Amino acid sequence: MRIVSGIQPTGHLHLGNYLGAIRNWVRMQDDAEKAGGDCLFFLADLHALSMPHVPAELSANTRAMTAALVACGIDPDRSTLFNQARVPAHAELQWLLNGTARIGWLNRMTQFKDKSGKNREGASAALYTYPVLQAADVLLYQATHVPVGEDQKQHLELARDVAQKFNNDYATPDAPVFTLPDPIIPSSAARIMSLRDGGSKMSKSDPSDMSRINLTDDADTMMQKVKKAKTDAEPLPSEPAGLEGRPEARNLVGIYATLADVSAADVLRDYAGQGFGAFKPALGELLVEKLGPINARFVALKDDRAALDAILDKGAEKARTLAKPTLDATYDVLGLCR
Image (cartoon, rainbow, N blue to C red; front, top):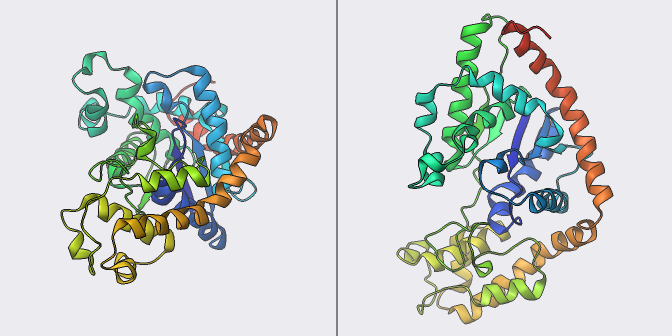
């Protein structure tokens, strides 16, 4: 088993990232180790170039997110943690795979349509082709499994299509160049919504900081954001069915349930009939209990640039070693002389 996954270092990690992905990365780290496998987790700073960015902010965010991942429990001694820019093989393999990826495949990618909006002609070429870089990210390491959310399934399908076509075109059945990775869709992954709009995902790009709980927030800030979160005037129901049509209430109950590792029905059993004046402080206390230690570890590490670069250098050195056989084989079967 080899698990590979990445996250863009844009903005701060928030509660949605933690409950939807990072907490499961930590669990996968443990599971892979028990199974004799390994995990590679990377900061996708090359992907960040697909959209306008401020260079100084990108480098600062890359180190800050490294600190946040370590604070959440990603152990650089047990997993390979690095940023793409330190491993040029990602960009090299993307170019080699561009000859295999098809325009028709990229035209079907819904995230390009979403991110480019009405200005498709003004979008960068990197935004259009970044699914090929995503394919390179996992194929480079012969990943057997890739954790994906619902919005990333299409990208993993593209990676499998690219790998299959490349193997068919240039390799032999008994010696394929690339492993076809399988998806991991964690059953415990939570879809955390905005604190200001229960119909929108919690997002780093939301202009309102009150819409999200950042992992960098201190206890007072977390409590204040929860108390000001949008709700309705009705008390909590006794069963989950009673949350239908109440997106903000469903979101807060879901956050509590996920943090506490219980079901929404268990939460409602304890708080049925109570208003948010009672529920919000309880949720705030739970957030502080669960995220407080993460915040403390983050604060202790975030300004230690030397330590953070040492972590990324160590991970990148290992990643480059793991990537080399695949990159060499790709050059060889394509007939490229080096």
